[in-house]
Length: 255
Image (cartoon, rainbow, N blue to C red; front, side, top):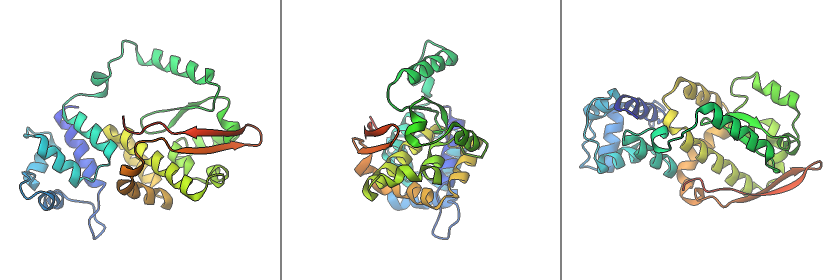
């Protein structure tokens, strides 16, 4: 990620934070927070302004740590944030010899061959495709999915999880399991979406998701809980009378 893009990302992450008065965090407020966390921090409002404009700034190890702390990044977000600060993008870190169309074709073929309910997501957790076993498990019809696709954010996994359409599945989980399930999905969303937080699409999506009171609560809550749940390994059961119940074990959210 080039300096200008990284600066736009820092600005977007700053604007996701709110002060005690409910106002978005300004550069000056972020600088004060950095100074409170580390009196030796060089992150003044002038320096933060330079970072956000993509100007050359010495982002040493301690400065990046101070910035990540002040922006209240979760463990998974911090890892991605530090990688992006190196100037490398996803295609450079994980090079592929195949074009996007070929990779998508292979992914769709794999999705259909899996004999368990499965879905394919993008970096915003928007649903690209599902296999034939997923809809019966969720007790959803293709017509319902089509209706959701016509609504803003309707194809997003988190929009679905926090909607009435997921209520039947949620009722199958004890409260503690639902809590961990929701926390885990929001932690994952925060991590994989971090390189795109400055895009207009993410701004629209987050604004839409934040209209849901439960999502707002979990969006803030994960900062306090990701140290407990980020390793994955959480188990839960889900299913229907038609498909039977599946026992799931979540994969690690940070590797």
